[in-house]
Length: 245
Ligand code: BTN
Image (cartoon, rainbow, N blue to C red; front, side, top):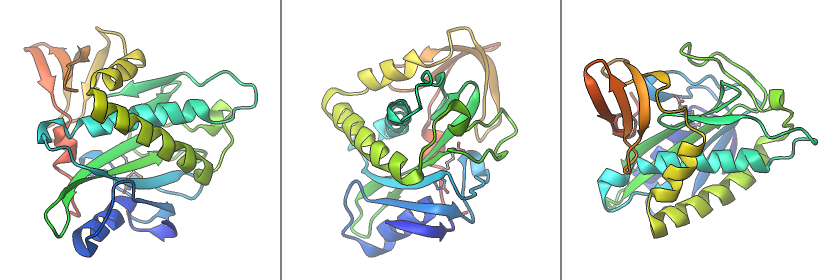
């Protein structure tokens, strides 16, 4: 379902799931602009026309502990998607992942992902996976690091085309994750992750954690070597803190 403008595609898809029932995996809502786009940790996601703002419905896994892995599935699917977009003989953009689910191109954030848990009228658990991809407009969303756009990497495309490629890529990655587990998603994510030892700061609801990147655990937890020792940080903070507040 496409809209000219919505408050937030995540909020809109949650309303459908929570009030209408009879929903199915893969239901996608997208909008040309959002008036109240939301990002991680209660941040605002500025949403001018020209970029991708979409939310896709995914059935929550029975084992709730694996639910945060869906954000990583989406992040690697976004990388698959970007690499499939036409780029006029230019080399592929230098893509990287930033924990938990951001995608950067040449160090600038080109995609943010906001997975939120919700449940239907019948009590079934769903994950609303919100995906924002900067195609052209570069807006300051978050002062922690620079913002990028695909246009600045010679990718000239439309939200409609990106969404077609993304739906296929996300579906393929979800099927693989369900059949074979987290290993290949983790491997793809690590291929484009910072090198071990890289100095990093991770924003959490409790405040930033600073240290050196020490890898991604087999369940998707970030490993950080901090002055107080090795920390295991789960992406669940994002998943379970979403809401209309
Ligand atoms: C982040 O902070 O990095 C996550 C940003 C997620 C933005 C997307 S845009 C589509 C969907 N609807 C929203 O309100 N947010 C997500």
